[in-house]
Image (cartoon, rainbow, N blue to C red; front, top):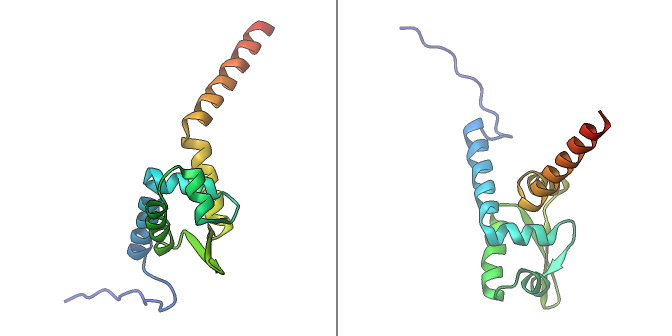
Amino acid sequence: MNISPRKPVSNTSPPEDEYSTLTARALKAMAHPLRWRILCTLGSKELSVSEIVERAGTSQSNVSQHLEQLRNKNIVIARKEANRVYYRIRNDQLLMLIGTMREVLCPANLDAKRSAKSGQAQREKSQQ
């Protein structure tokens, strides 16, 4: 019987399967339209729940439920000050990821890029 040795398991970092699961859960949490709007609203700012509600255009209870899900997935962090709760995106890496996703996936950005490419192609054609 030939038994191959197992790789040592580090107690400090989860195995790749767990990384994949954690990543998928975080992306799934961000994929909801209202949660995505909340993240885009936050950007690099720290905002109170009432400010997020005003900008998101939905009820306070709805926003709070979605903020809780984002907090549980370690995407945003909360800070309580007196009777207000402020939220911000957890770290610069997540902020960069969200910015990249917006740049690549948002229709307005795609239309702007297409328009820029079209304009550049027309300029190059007219210079020939």
